[in-house]
Length: 386
Image (cartoon, rainbow, N blue to C red; front, side):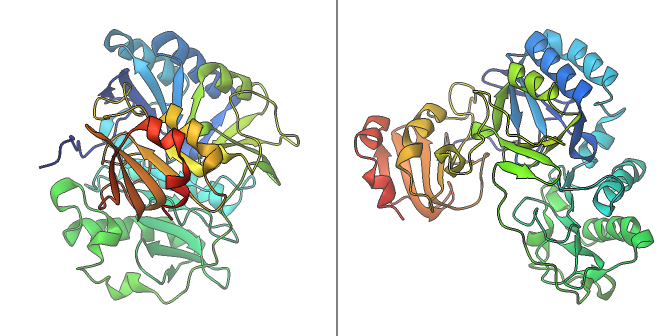
């Protein structure tokens, strides 16, 4: 039996989750974008009703932290005035859409995302809460490493495709049939037993269920783009956030710089139309910043499941991590911040940190019971853990 609690659901605006620092209220920006006014409004509400800390998640959602129970209702009222709350919990839960931030006004990425979200709200599919969709139909795929179960992409020849996550090939679709194909694939997933138990994911389901011929397709997906880094892009400035977290004052600062802010799953925000990297203490603006090579969850005391503080240790260890190595510091074996393998993973336990080599927080440890003081005194143990 696990020593930690697996809740099987994610927090949302209408159904927050209690953490060590109060309620966590998650927002799903429509189209992955906030207007300047919405971003400023979130910053103000976070400072008034929460503890002023805001997370950017691996699904490009925002989380307002430290919300008091008596403040939840006025917080929701404020978010509703900003157009950020769904009318019903089911609609909010099913609207789990990840959007590539590198779109131009009116292109397929923006327009398909704008069509998919209301289509999901209109149709009750019975999907697991973590089941998600990706709109990633630029010239190169940028969301392939991010979690999603059904993906709208480009094929090698440039045509639109719909792909079940875990499938090697995609189904080529005409522009007008894309959304219906996505919904039909989601319906097949449920009808074929993929949603059994409420935690199913597409890639795992395909290990035991073959796609129908109508969805199998034969189009190979387009090439993947290199991992994005902070810097100036054609659509604006991409700025990083250490551990995917920012202060409400930092979000308010960003809201004053650009007409819109696009969320990403890479602990970065795209500031629309900005041609110079902003200078602010709360931002990571250099591609070689060692903080970009380190992942750390909230840790103790903010998370009641965590056995250890994580982020102060991660900041101290970051300069000692080689450029080609990624370090994950997890407060427990759940690995919420990064369930996938890393070159080096430190896992908090009652006896100190376990060290996992080239694995996830749930894999077997190569070393056990390491104390933070040991790691800081001799960080070579991390470099040797490759």
